Image (tube, rainbow, N blue to C red):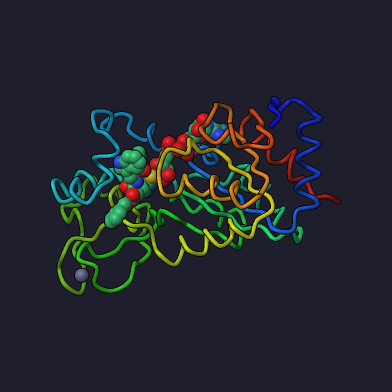
Length: 257
Ligand code: BV8
Ligand code: ZN
């Protein structure tokens, strides 16, 4: 296993080769791929008013039931910021690579929908999507919600389910909740079929998502990490590209021409 700084042209050239010759590529992303779009990573999301909360307590059903307006407003603030954000060069490079004919499956932990907005067509959202809401008691289907509505002044916080009157909640996977079964199974299948997996912008701490790069490695795929900081996956990586997604991915995925 070789380590290389993103600036190391030979490492980039080697991984560019792997991208060109790979049959099936999985790009596994975390909050770091959206950092250059100005979206704070999950733990950084707790700035200002939320700084005194622990994300692993706030992003839970118990946290929501304990104080629905507080948790609703935390998601509304993140949703409004996400609606104002734009996909960055990293998101666009992944989408361009897919458009280039490479069989690319994006498996993301992010709930911001930016991969799809950048043009990626095969995106598996393991942890849901902040732009949708659903009934707390599980009736009916998730619905898109207007991201720019100012909930700070709205007394209907959280709004009630139109069918049963229970509170609406974000359609995201909270800690202690199961991931959407069909999505996770498709992600596992894509990982087992892949011959190359790019692990971009994730601290790989949250399970079961963080187990996917290990499964790819165990199934014989080459794993490449793109991250400015060390991660637990580095030890199993065929290459580690130390750098920001918005810089490394365009250099890595430029169309093989
Ligand atoms: C479940 C949606 C079970 C919500 C999220 C003890 C041991 C192991 C596991 C557990 C444990 N105790 C509890 C658990 C289980 C728990 C878990 O894994 N906890 C962890 C913290 C230990 N997991 C769960 O609860 C999961 N469910 O296990 O259910 C079960 C079993 C039976 C029956 C019922 C249930 C559900 C987990 C999903 C939680 N939801 N998101 C929301 O967003 O509000 S997770 C959330 O945090 C994100 O989605 C992401 O997945 C995760 C990590 O977020 P961040 O750290 O912010 O982002 P990231 O990891 O991506 O880190 C940023 C990275 O980017 C860094 O590496 C940084 O260096 C890099 N970076 C920064 N800038 C850039 C960059 N990289 C590239 N370019 C840049 N410019
Ligand atoms: Zn309902």
